[in-house]
Length: 241
Ligand code: MN
Image 1: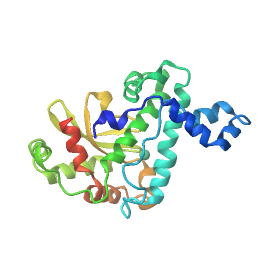
Image 2: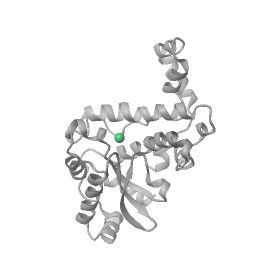
Image 3: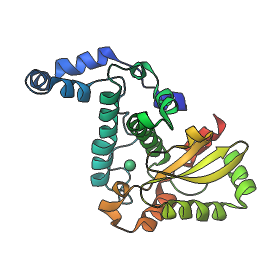
C-alpha cells in the first residue's frame, strides 16, 4: 500500500449523505441541538481510516481496551477537531499532508496543525504495527540499517532509548534523512515530514498509548512493540516508495 493510498483524504459527499440517511437519529438530533457541532463531528473532508487489523489483534501486547480508546476516541477526536477547525476555510479542500505542511510553525494555526498531524501520525502508527510483527527487517532495509547503525541490535537499542527518553508526550521514529537512516523523536503532534525527513516507522509514546496496559512502564510497552508488533514490511515499503 502506498503512502498516497493510506492517507488519501478527500471530501466524499456521497458517503456522507449515505451516513446521514442511515443515521436518522443523528440527523434528527442535528436539528435539535447544536447542529453546527453535530454536523462537524459527523462529516467534513477528513475521515478516520479503518484500522489495518481487528481491534483485538494486537493483544496481549496492546489490548482491545487500549485500542478502543486510542483509535475510537483519541484518533477519532483529532479527526473531528480538524473537521471543525477547517470548516469554511480554504484548508477544507486540501489533502491532509498539505494542511500539515501549510500550518507547521504558524502560531495562529497551531490547533489545526496539532490535530492534522495527530490524524496523520496515528494512521502511520497503526500501519507501523501488525499482529505477529517484530523480528528483523530483511533485504535493502536490513542492509541500510546495518550500514547506518552498525547492526540491527544497535538500531533497536537506539530506537528504544529514543522512545523511552522522549520527555512527555510524543513519538519515536525511524526516518530517512537525505540518504541516511536515523532515529528521531518528536514532541506532542510534531512529525518528521515538516522537517524534511521521510518516516519509515513510528511508536506512539503518549501515555494514552500504553497506560491502560502498562501504567507507567513505558519501557515495557516499547520493548513489547519492538519484539512482537513492529511492522518491518511497512518500513520496507516506505523506504522503497
Ligand atoms: Mn496516540
